[in-house]
Image (cartoon, rainbow, N blue to C red; front, side, top):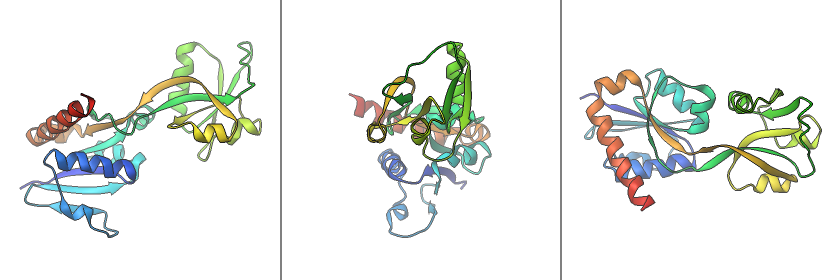
Length: 212
């Protein structure tokens, strides 16, 4: 029996998502054990789960190491992996937003300096506004960039807004809402469609019940 390979993001979101998978009938009890293992199998149900860094889930799925996985919409928009997006799981909700210091005034006559980890999302957003920008790609905490005068604004994920408040920044605009999505490898979807559709339908029912 061929196993359905499922990539889950490490961390709180992954734990929550696994709970949904289990509730949909795709359980793997070994995954709940306290250990440092990364790969878990339930041969009886034909399942293999593995934990990966959230930003890597789409890579595993796109390249076929995983048949399905769960990735944030931010990752899908930023890296545009060649995968099928099957379902919005409506968990891990946050937003991609523009933030700045409280007293910042956007003078449209000058180039806007934007610090971000998400250069494609930021570029696409400002291109849609016809705004001239200078992208400053950062890998670490972007909140410090406006404080030190490196940038005028930042484009980053905002969940509660507490980090922004503590650094005397405020949200100015929402770029796009973000949530976790079920994604599938395109070839796997052709060869394992019945099982993947069963998973998608089970998860969709849970999402619908939660939203009711």
